Image (cartoon, rainbow, N blue to C red; front, side, top):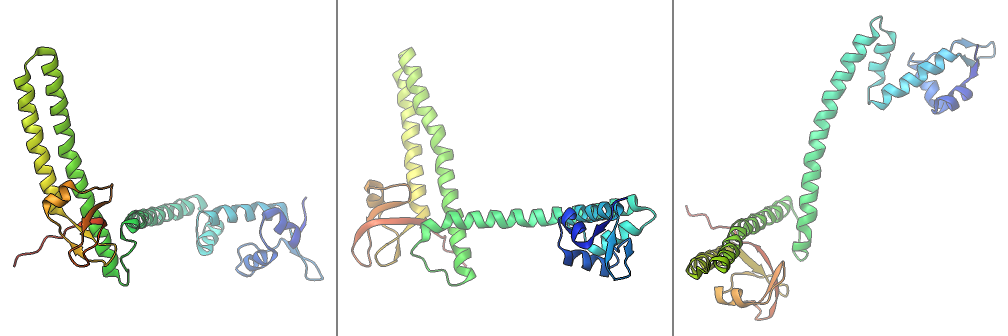
Length: 243
């Protein structure tokens, strides 16, 4: 029959001596025997009980719930109920953490576009994220219309190439040009620009925007406030509410 001191049991159970003493105080894991000198002695059954306690603790069950399980005459039923409750709690926490992670990633994606914008309140943060979402809708709308127009353009060209019906291609090009013009106008009226020099948000003329040099996030336009021509970051143009 195995016989362990407090230190030996703690080592075998991968816990601290202080933890064993705490479990003893709570009546969760009392020693099998206590020597005349007051030393606690534990048996093999105590080691197995300690391993079970650690397993249940690893499932985030409270010590009170573990005590109820271990002391119950219907341990299986009590354990099943405790695990079901814990499952519901973990699923709720998982949903909450998923939403937190979604918000965190949204903020991370938004920050590079607003490096010069101070964030001093929750309103600033909400505005930044709403602006990012608005820009995303604009870009998705452009993509949603642009891809079909590209298909029409190339489809009619290939058809004309094989059939010789270039009027069909001309019709396809007319549709593509009209569609591209609408996409450009929709983009123009949906975005504004932030001057990196003075921070002014402004709306340049359509002609300037259309012919300006640009990259994926900015266009080289002239700020009407400071007069400097820089690569100005595009932001979503908030629609003015009419009362």
